[in-house]
Image (cartoon, rainbow, N blue to C red; front, side, top):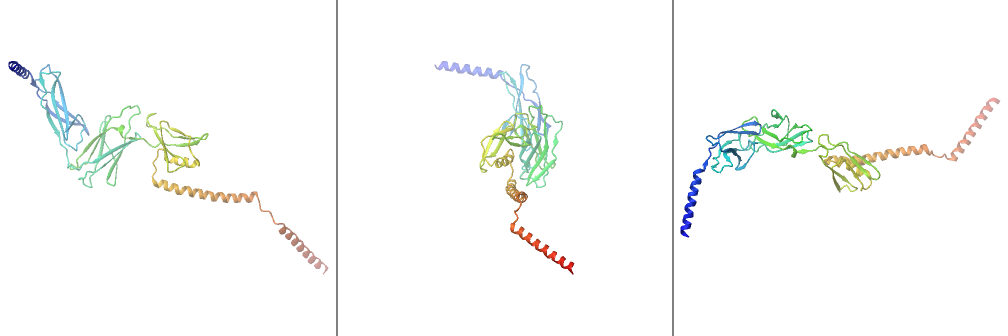
Length: 360
């Protein structure tokens, strides 16, 4: 047994020596470099290795390393160090090993902590985009952040010019629309930077389909048909048909209890409701697809009783005048007789005076 084991070990060692003799390491790529295609997209380039056998089906493996997290991507963030690695390999070839990694890095510019943070964008009704962000904790108060954007289809990047600052939050609005025949939307690259070299720029890639916020439907109408409430509203002009679903909120008698219904059509029939019906109508119109603030409700609560009170007073005055015209007051008979006898006495006295004058 010992001789068999020794013979097997010798043969295994010879096999390994033969394998190592025929296995070789490929040379690495050369001249690894990068360039910006657009504001947040990098193009990594390199030259193929030299002295590679024609039988080698050459291919490359590449990794982008950011804070030791490795993943394949072509976008850059600019506010963090990015390291790119590439190596050469022979596909379907067991006689060669991959080359060593060749690496280069893209260092961020500016002072750490000055880049914009908490970037958030909303695409309103497929028409315009609103982006907000906060200044970096180490950025000075007079930092003039600027937003640039680009997507596949634009020749050059565009600058957002509609800026505003409220309570230290930056906001910028720009038009964003695509042809209606478009079935997919390209990713949008957003760059926020300052003219000063001390402020660190930041890049972000956004998928617009995840940022969509539909507009509030218009022309809401309500009607009562055969003991049913029928609610209808206009369809969207920017979204394809059957692309949206609608959420209807209404109050049924109890104003503190809300009922929510989700529908895929632009109309709804309510069959179970309580009277008075004006409560259902008023709060349905307010609540459907609209979130009103507390000030509106406060004004509404004051205005409705005031209108009802004024209307009641006007109605009472009108009814009183109408009653006088239809049912005039009945005269007192005693007053009529008194007037008749009084007029006769006056006529008799006048006649006596005239007769006395004639006799004289």
